[in-house]
Length: 184
Ligand SMILES: Cc1cc2nc3c(=O)[nH]c(=O)nc-3n(C[C@H](O)[C@H](O)[C@H](O)COP(=O)(O)O)c2cc1C
Image 1: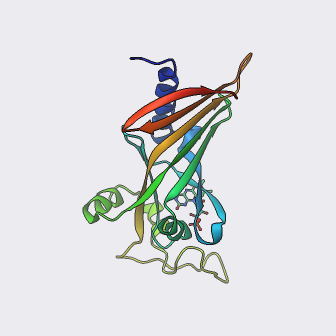
Image 2: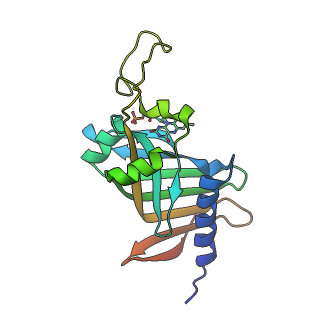
Image 3: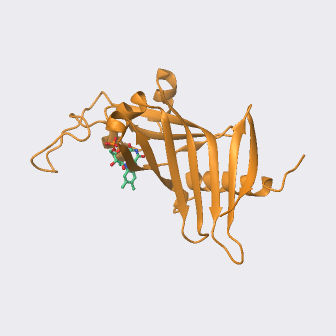
């Protein structure tokens, strides 16, 4: 049965795909929150690389980065997307997993542009202190490229509009997404 919230679920799925594939789309970037060590909420911007049918969202990172440590500590994460033209906010809650399949990593690594490879090949771990920003050295052969996949279990859609704002919570229950309208 088609529910009244379905068109909005479709809209958010389409917008996430645009984030991945359309140059300049605001959903290319999201803010990811982790709560790892010491119960400290931590935020950072990441690039949305892939969204699959079953609501798995993928980003790339250096496996030595702190976020990986936090995800290992606690794999519950949140993602925040905002489109200022549509006044649309999407909040995603999910479980993060670090992809360790070597063949898969190799496949995606070969698609990383040469000038972006530096993001995953610094000699020292990201966040290490240095005396000068121009003296970072990079590995030639090796890399620390890593992919993180977030399996969403709850997504909240909020659009500010007149006369009524629109807020919908989508929850994945038994493999199916269900939507319900909420008081904005
Ligand atoms: C526009 C922009 C895009 C970014 N994209 C990524 C990304 O895709 N992956 C990533 O690991 N860090 C990305 N960063 C850097 C992170 O925001 C963050 O500073 C870094 O990864 C260290 O985070 P951590 O110490 O929590 O691991 C991006 C930063 C900016 C400003």
